[in-house]
Length: 318
Image (cartoon, rainbow, N blue to C red; front, side, top):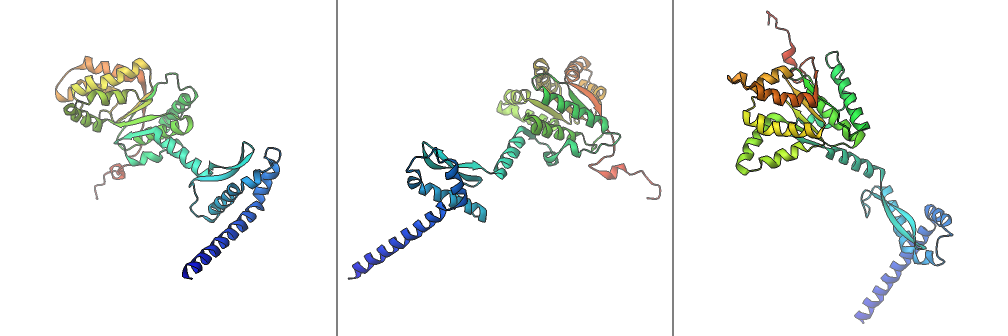
């Protein structure tokens, strides 16, 4: 007797479930979007397409309503749409506007490879660069460079050598150029903090990965060497690291940019080792010849935005 009651209960549940399902399917068939689809594709659909496609129609309406209610759909980031496939009704999932925008943002971000660079360059933009009198020439040069590369990426375009005091926005400007190249032309850039890179290269000697690291850097679509000359560069780094990278980029005519607190003339002295009592001017000039081929010097001036206290004029009363 007990078994019979259980079977009857299960049968009733099954019937109720089927009734609820058919009720929901009926409502889905009467949905305005579904009706519009059926009218638009009436000539393409098989005679039994609706009977065979009720599950697909219900899936479409159900998933569309989940998205409208803010619930987690079957395929997050994608919206359902009814399609005709071989005369039958099917559901396809297309990316939402938000999904496409997020994918595009991620794609652009992936084009900019920052190695030991400050986080604030992630959102750097030429439109947000403050065009003070001391920085307007650099901003104009940056815009010209971006427009030229985007318009004709296969042609060699001479880069920029941004020179000026610490904190005036040279690194930010490099980041802004990189982001604009990514957003406007889908062009990949590698930004490299030279002093940190030098330390890593010395460490790479023990792991025998020097050539691998050099090869990866020298082949960057657009290369930016930030803060070159900020610290003393050894003859080995000058000749066997920077020399190889710059020689390759000069031969292949690949866009290369620099930033430095030293002018090109001062960098020449530093590379020659005059500050260390050496005098390897010929070797330094060889490096500078490559730099001058790859980039033209543009001065960046103004206040130290990184540390405003350094801009204060000394006062005897303080």
